[in-house]
Length: 178
Image (cartoon, rainbow, N blue to C red):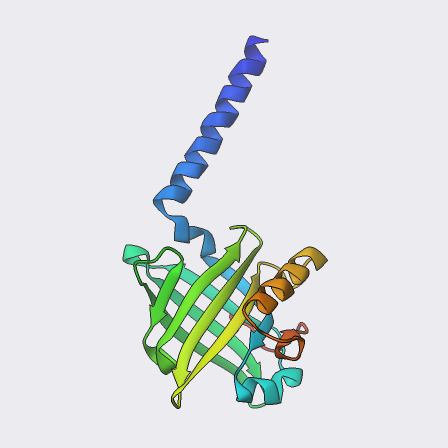
């Protein structure tokens, strides 16, 4: 009985330590390699080419003061397009700002902190406010439950079914390439 109590106590201590680390660095959960497995957008250029889009990759690194460096590898007709952006905290938990490519605001809508994250991005381009919802996954395969959650969140953000695209997997464009 005493051994069981000690084991439970150690397990609780470990859980509290992990929770304390997450509280000290809540954005650290988002760090690492992600696959962008689904999109929804009101952008005309997105709507014109959405059926040709494939799964992209992102790598997120937490910088000092909780800012994020995000590297992307996006397959296009012209080849693998790679880019990087710095996102700074706005002061609102889970919200970040990037001054590159149209002053983007990115907000974490939902995440379990381990396997998926749903990110809502807004930017102004040519005087129009464009919105995009992205489903980030740690793996190429997304469970039906998470796909359904993404579609539900997309509809709550006023995206129609025609604006939502589950992206097919691809192997030709990766962040791992030299």
